[in-house]
Amino acid sequence: MSSLNIVIALNKPEGMTSQQAVTKVKRIYGVKKAGHAGTLDPLATGVLLVCLGEATKISRFLMDKEKEYRARMKIGIRTDTLDAEGTVTEVRNVPDFSAHDIEKAAREFTGRIMQKPPMYSALKHKGRPLYALAREGITVERALRPVDIYSLSITDVNLPYVDLNICCSKGTYIRTLCDDLGERLGTLAHLTSLVRTRTGMFSLEQTAGFDQLSADGKELRALPYIYSIDEALSELVEVFVKEEDYHRARNGMPISAENVKASDHSAFVRLKSPSGELFGIGRIENDKIAAERILNL
Image (cartoon, rainbow, N blue to C red; front, side, top):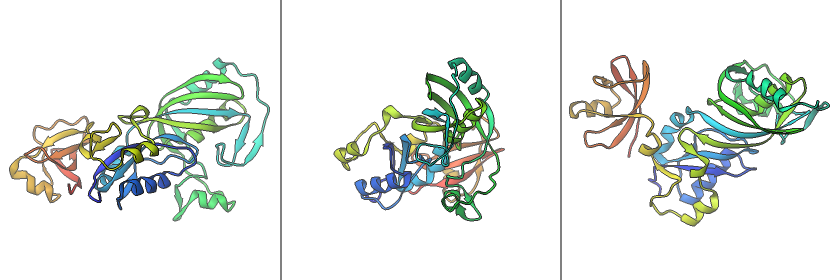
């Protein structure tokens, strides 16, 4: 199984870091090389893409996809981590908001917004993770970062709790979104539960938990939560490289992008041999295709 090159759509349980989840998958499948495509906090559950073998080379292409979340926040309380795992730092009375009040405030957070990453995050400052500094009581300035909120809907209001559905770009901190929404309402808020229901084409309904992974074992048969690298990248246009260009492309040299249509001036494509085998991912730049990643399958 050391040569297993697949993507597993895992339903990560609560209370486990994403890296701990990867380690457990490695043990189940007996592989040495594995990673994930987009961190979920320990509090969060839901879709975590675990990449094995050569599939680790495509993780960043999977991370770039839009995400959907189902979240619950509690109004009136702020914590140091901005979620229920943290220590309460401030408490305020909860005004008698109507659903309309909350929906109106939420509308201000759709589109391109600027977010300040939380101190309890894996981002680094001078080589050290922010969460390590935060645990030492150190706070540093964090630059605002643009993120896209494609949709934000309020699905239930039962004060002090508010349920939300969010569709957003990579890099969005739902904890920060809840904190900012609380401030916009003139009070406080923190995240109490979070489920990632989709990342790109991978939905929660197509995931498996650890029990199912263990029960199904190492059989390489068709399972709804296991994807080949080609299947995981199926949203990318496939380019069949001509025989005369194949070895150049295989060695990382640019080839002509003649007759290849890209949605914009710079797009990723699946590179396939003349016989149809996936061997890499290319980037279209002007009239050339440059190899981004070469896969050893």
